[in-house]
Every structure is written in structure tokens, then in C-alpha cells.
Image (cartoon, rainbow, N blue to C red; front, top):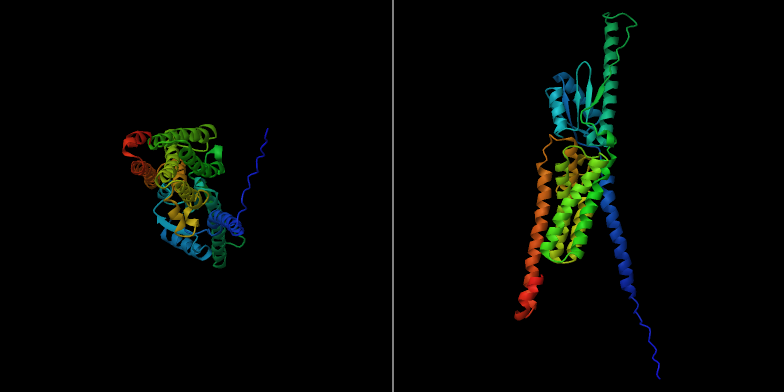
Length: 366
């Protein structure tokens, strides 16, 4: 009886150069990821916040001069005829706030635009009140010096009223839920696209899976965010359509790129969505705060368009939402076209590689 001894399998050592190269490449990738997320925040600055101002020409000119001196470049001011016109610009998101001048000055805010803008306009109200009281005190002193008012005349106190014309919902009073929801929407699209790419075979089945994923995901997420937590406002069905379309757009693009160029397509979709689109989405700060032109560029990607669309549908129903809808539809079409193109390309590859008598059977399996 003979006994055999199984020799252990020896795995060859990785060459030193390759080991070091892999380590360096991994470190570079981590640095790029960090830069992608930190750079937009560290380079952002408070600038070009669109506001409206209403009042007589002399008052408007005085306030404009003050803003140019004390807050140069912070505000992009548009003059309007009345308070109603200022409110209208805020409701359409053409302005993030407004100053209404008169006997009782008023600062109009929209907390639904985000905490950063609300804090900025609150500080502006305090500055206007200090300036108004100083002007009133100077007027009293001048009148006393001219004998038009008796000594000891009490200086008037002017209160600048702050009115939130588009407030956040009481269920999300600080807007944290609306901001926090942006990243899961991005991640959800990525997860769906990657899983479908790996687990579903057949181009048409993948298209059906992506469609079902967008529909179910849209209703599920809006059901949680609006029906359960009350983060979203407005029409439930329109919100579900917007969220579902955003998830479909990301997932279909990843699946389409995978069908078109192989596994590298998943990396392309992930980089465009997570490392470019998400950091530039302006979900947590106004577009104007980002270094130009990156804020505007970010709105051409799914994360930026979806974040803007969801906020507008919830709190600014009068805003023009055509552009974000078109962006989501555009990315969806790119994904679908890539899936179809990849399907026919694969058929051509199979037809060229398989003998003629087996071609029909293999194409049926594609």
C-alpha cells in the first residue's frame, strides 16, 4: 500500500516593485476621495447671495452703498417695486431673501433655502437695525442742535422685523433631514446600479430591473421621508416621481456603462456620481458659495439636479423646475441608450466568435 503526500501549494511572492506600487496607488485613491469631498467645502465662500430690495430710491441707494461697503460681494441685489414683488421672487427662488424699507423696515427670509442663508440674513437684519437706530439718533441730535426739538428728547428705537416667508416644516425645523437625505439618494442609485450589473443577466432584464428599482425606490424613500418623518412636503406622487427618476438615472447609467465597456463602466459611473456629482451638488449650501463655475456645473449631474428638484418641489412650488427634470431625464436616456447599444454590441461579438450552426442558439441566450 502506497501513501501519497500532497505537496503544499506555494504562492509566489509579489514582486517588491508591484507591492510598493499597489500601496502608493491605494494611498493616492484615498487622497483623491478626500480631496473630492473636502475641496468644495474648504474653497467655498459667502458671495453673490441673490436678494431683493424694495423702497424709495433714496433708501435703496443708501442700503446699497452700505452693503457695498460692509459686505462687498456678499449680496447680489435686485431692486423691486413692492414687498409683494419681493415675496414673489423668494417663492420662485430668484432671490433667497429681501429687504423691505420704510417706516418699519423688514427683512424677508426663507429658511427652506438652508441654515447658511438664514443666518446670513439674520445678521443683515441686525446690521440694518443698528444703522437705522444710529440714523434716527443722529436726526434727533440734529433737531435738538437746531432748536427744532427740546433737550432730552428720547431717541426713537426702530425694530427691523424678520419674516420667514418660506419656513421649513415643523417636522424638520432645522432642515437637517432634507440635507441628510441627499447622500442616501446618491448611494441608493449606486447600489442599485452595481447590484443589477452583477446579479442580473440579459440587457432587457436589466432594463426592467432598473425600472422596477426606480419605481419601488421612489415610493419607498418618499414614503419614509414624507409619510413617516415629514421631511418632504408637497405632492407625494410628484416627489416619488422625482426621487424614483433620480435613482433610475444613476442606476441606469452605471448598468449602461457596464454593458457598453464592461466592468470599467461601473467605475466610471461611480466616479462621476460619487466623486464629482455628489461633492458639487450644493445639497448643504447655496450654489453661489462654491468657487465658480463648479456650483453651476454640479447642477448638470444627478446629485445636484435631484437635490435642487426635491427642495423646490417641497418648499418652492412656484420655482422653475424644468432644468433639473431635464437633467435627470437626460442621464436616464444616456443609461438606457448605453444598455441597448451594449446589448447589440455583445450580440455582434458573440456572432463573430461562435460557429454559424451555434449562432442562433447563443443569440437567444444573450
